[in-house]
Image (cartoon, rainbow, N blue to C red):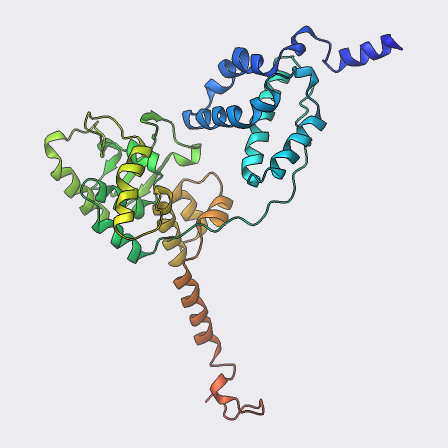
Length: 340
């Protein structure tokens, strides 16, 4: 009986000497070097934060072989009981699962106990605040150059802030009216964009060309083809967090607006594309989304005024056919024909 149990544990990978290593040690010695280092800087930062805040306090001193699916299911349930958001708990599970996947890949375990863990249905996401044209104008009135041009360009192109900060003049063709997006900035460091779809060439209109030409002339003394469109004082890329805290939020406060983010400026662009009837596939290419579902589900939030105009247009279309309320008497019968 003991032999059978020993063989069972051996087959499960739980009697391997390396399987007795603590998760913290595995992360420090193997996972960080072999897995985490291959990810984008922004992803690395997010994973480290999740590890330190959620995963390590619970599993750091546990042996790999002692972490069971039941333990992880309990971990997920506890996080929800603590009132954490669905996506926050999901992110913690994703990071833990990544670590355990690596333990399987490097023969520490035979299987990943995080696989198959159940999650409750995701609640309805909170609708993001959408800035309208009036709010954008108020914000711009509080900004000086080059920050004003940065905000305008973001709204006109839908670029992510990291893509905006990585733009170099050699990527801008004012004659052809295009911008090539091939780099991004995260915490002041240049890296590859978010996904392969993020590497793209987007068209720009005449007003954007005028904006960029004026910006180039304004800073002609520092201009060079390899240089950034919006460099910091030392010529390198800005840190997006610094611009948010020192420029964008103070300007929004001065304009009497609620908290404004760079992402909301990207929302403006996407919402207007939706408003004017641009097909989702084209919007996906413009915004650099990995899938058209992201474009449909997240960025095409309809501005309330647009929703109202749509309903008013629907009424104008249908009322030549259906009776108008003013033409229906107290008895509920139509008093006058609508169609002449």
